Amino acid sequence: MLAETRSDRTAKSTRVFGDYLIMLAALCVLSVWYYGTDAVRTLAVCVVTAFACDFVASIIINKQYYAADLSGICAGIIIALMLPATAPVYVGIVASSFAILVAKIPFGGGMRAPFVPSAAGFAFAAVCFKNEVFSYSGGRAFMKTMPLTSSLAAGNTVKLSASNLIDMLTGNILGPMGTTCIIALLGCFVFLFIRRRSSLLPSAGFVLSCLLISLVFPRSDGSVISCAVMELCSGSLLFAAVFMLTNPATMPVHTANKVVYGVFTGAVCMVMRRLAAFEEPVCFAVLIANAFSPLLDMLTDRMRIIVSSHKKVKEAAVNG
Image (tube, rainbow, N blue to C red; front, side, top):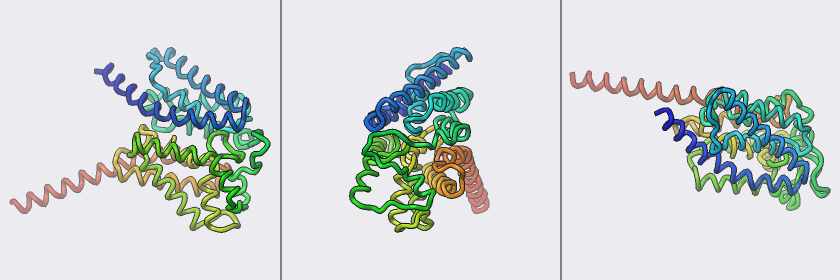
């Protein structure tokens, strides 16, 4: 029975993270196009570290390593794409090692982890190496040099001209090496809608929450619309909506709770963007939401039990 359960879990992991791997492949190609060998180096460091930690840890705890479990490799790629292409090698090693050895393996694998491993790894690296994680440079000569997150943090805005919109949509701006191409991320949303549309409920709540807060409380000195567009297109916000909020191991089970989970994550993210010490705190917001996810389902189940008990008592009183 245990072997069957483990096999089913591995098969589900293969389906879920296989979908992620397909989407991540496109973003990897774009990151290499914009950042060249720096992107290749960062990707290689994070993926090799994640795979090595996953494989060695499985041997140490006397557990069979399943090559079909793609969660570790996906975690390494996700972390790499959220880092600057020029990030030092040790940053990728520390982030990927923490994701696998601390946030994944102790809980029994990617489909049982209570926190998104890639979010935990990136957050740990951000705390340890803030300057290295949020210092963007390199890239092709024609790329815009001011990251949108830095502009918003400084209270500045970018005028929404046709040229600037094209740059934002195509990722022709400095930032995390694989999270700035909005067109590619929209394509990922479409892919997930076809494959696992119910998993997009947290993403919808998250994006809507971020949009509404940015419209009501703009951070820049420009128009409200410009600020809202910059908020959604900056940093790793939409990237996290695709690859972190849709993680089946950490999202609530009940449909309504999935939307609440996304809205809560978006609200926390936008508050932290204003008050936190990091210009892009989305991973911290995801981790906070992960901690409350089981509570949402527990409260829902408790309410259903109370309502059901109340109905039974009422029916008994009527029949009696």
